[in-house]
Image 1 (cartoon, rainbow, N blue to C red):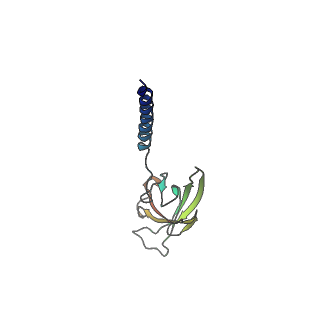
Image 2 (tube, rainbow, N blue to C red):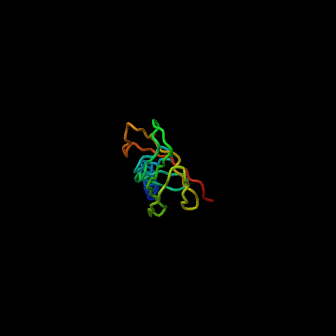
Image 3 (spheres, rainbow, N blue to C red):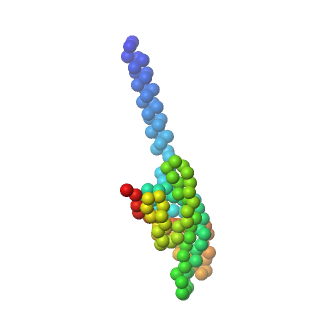
Length: 133
């Protein structure tokens, strides 16, 4: 008879542990720093970031001749571990100081063309973070 209370306690602990595992497995993992759309959060070698809005896309269209290559500027959010959000701006190919390292917007897709406008939902970005101890 004395084993029944222990058995009941063991079964309760096991059920709680299994329910915790089931809840965590249903969470959506964060994307890595490649092929990130506007509004998607991504884990980029340390920081969690989210591209919010394209501020400028003055790239030279792939089917045109230009004197200036142009640039892309993106409004970003840095989501800190405590949930605090900090806005910053990333410019294609230019490192930006973020936390204890440098964050770089490495590529923007699709290529710009003279005959087609890029819709905000079509943009995809790749990021890199170098830093940390």
